[in-house]
Length: 369
Ligand code: PMP
Image (cartoon, rainbow, N blue to C red; front, side, top):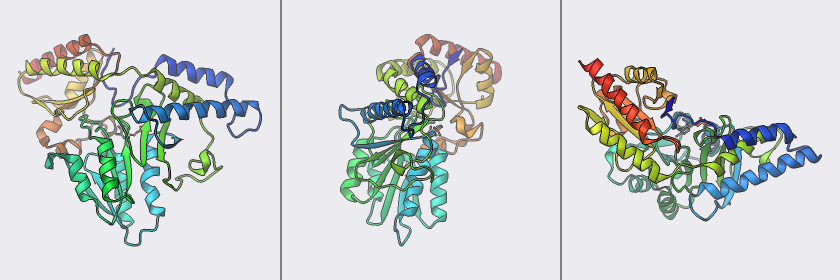
């Protein structure tokens, strides 16, 4: 099997599997229990918190704030965004975002519009400097800005620390939320609220986190037993948290390796006719989106699968539906119909890329003939 769909999800690493198993065997206590088993769980969770706070910034300085464990980034994004409903905003207020967000942000923003918020969504295709464009929109009435660090379909990345700094300079009261799912451990992150997900970095599904900057007060999404300082009720899944920490510690992806794979892929694609590249230089090297004109995405996907090669058409979440995000990058409808997304992990090799390209070339020959 050649798995090239790591932006959809990743295989849990051996370290994660081992940590989950170990916690299930010996640290299954409820972190709220007063006995020793509860204490072991508390210790595992505390250590994981420290690891995540150190890892999220992508710099030597740990994140200055706290981290809540959630069921995944969908919950983290909903918690971050719906939180503004509870703040006193007499006129609704303005929220700035982008036209390339994941549905867990995009659809939550639509809900906020229904509650009277004025949501502005910018498309990268219209701006040379996207961060500058987002900052330019910030005014006195802007309650929140929500932007993804790295887009899941093309890999388009923004300079998140710059965005955070410049928004705060313009309006310190504007809350900055970053969907950091595809950027976590790959690019530097900063913000008042940052969402990440375990299953994109070789941990299990069902675990994610929301980072909350020191001094930022949020309202919980869930009511219940008051775990995690009352901010995220529900018994902490200590096994998944242990696995999440282990996956963060074991993460082996590096930019140079991904860049070498990307450049091999682009070289090979350049030898074929009528290919459109949808991932620009502003994109992270582990995600490459391209259109094989004349071959619809699902035909290509199934053809590749015959040889055990797994890629994606746009995002896994869109389940074969036409991408709503690619047009915001200026990709034509015809090219969006033929889009293929390849996303690498540390274990992928140049040989994987070659096998992928050999099969793409064969598929083109068969279909375009
Ligand atoms: N945001 C982005 C950018 C994503 O790629 C995903 C997963 N496809 C999510 C949010 C949702 O994450 P989860 O699967 O953990 O709910």
